[in-house]
Length: 329
Figure 1 (spheres, rainbow, N blue to C red):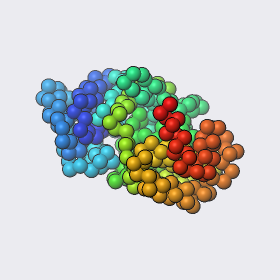
Figure 2: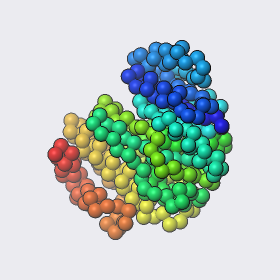
Figure 3: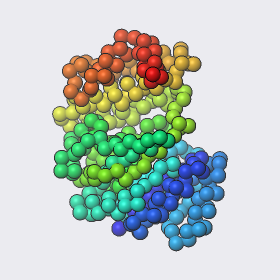
């Protein structure tokens, strides 16, 4: 079974070697590595060419393109992939050596279109394994259960930490949206169309947490996350999936309202007027007003977030002040 590993790379010269070598070291030997150099301005390309020169036995393809962002680089990799299965790996992350073989075995044993594993956030001083919780029997067969897994947080909304059957992605004519932050959100609809999704309860994916990659300003792209979340809402309506009202409410209020409010609170202190306009935009949206109905009784929303939502509706400025103090404590 051949796996294509797609690696978008933009200005990651300090990390790309560890990333690519972790794929070369996989116990699964039939691996195609596709690195899409997204017009890096540092030494990323030189590092890649050095790896290729010192590992001539490895099926390593280096594609350099004008900068298109993470989504554009992934889409380029999708077009170039030839493996039966494929996986995405960000250029500053890395894999445990058994990941591809173990996920392939799970895919083959269950005839699965998608296999998911746990992942580990790696900070400078600690590591944090994230699984999101258990899936009964570690296998999902229907759209409702898959969507509930994503919306409740039991399945990570990420292109990484997953193995996809390439024919499944091609049949869906899937591509990542270019020009948006949070480009992983459409993964929800992609995987919801799978007939079999398998979860492997082991952390194989190492997700590096870099201070320099944290958003430190506010921009319209943050707010435009609603476009992608609306696609999920519309998908659920289109397919008439019942029984997801509470978990969808929780997803919207957490993944859109609270996450953006937290970013605006932390990074909008020098753009107060723009920050306040964004707060108004979020809170006045029809979807926000709808999902704020009866949120205090939602079993998927924890007490801390309910308090946060209450404060946000009461006074966005007060919420921003208190949240920033909380994070600085």
